[in-house]
Image 1 (tube, one colour):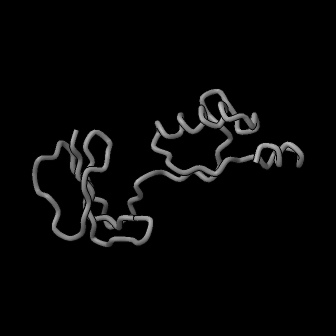
Image 2 (spheres, rainbow, N blue to C red):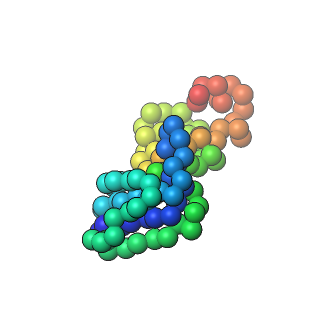
Length: 109
C-alpha cells in the first residue's frame, strides 16, 4: 500500500519542514519534501491539516512489553520489550524504573 501524507510540519532530527509531505510504501518512508507534492499513484491520502508529523512515536513512560519488564534488568527482557513497542510504531522509549528500590534502579540502569 502506498500512502501520501500532505500538509504537515515534518519533524526531522535537525529541523522542522513546514508545508511538507511524506510518502510511505508498505509502512516504510519512501520520500518526503516540501511544497508541491506528488499527485497520483496512492492507495490512501491524508491531509495533516498543518499538524506535526514525526517519523516514529515517542513513549516517555514504558514499563516493558511482550510479557517482560525493564525491572528484569536483563538484555533479553529489554530486547523483547523493544521489539513489541517497535511493532506498534514506537521508535523511542524512556524505560520507567521509578517504582524500584534505589539499589535495583541502579542495577537496571
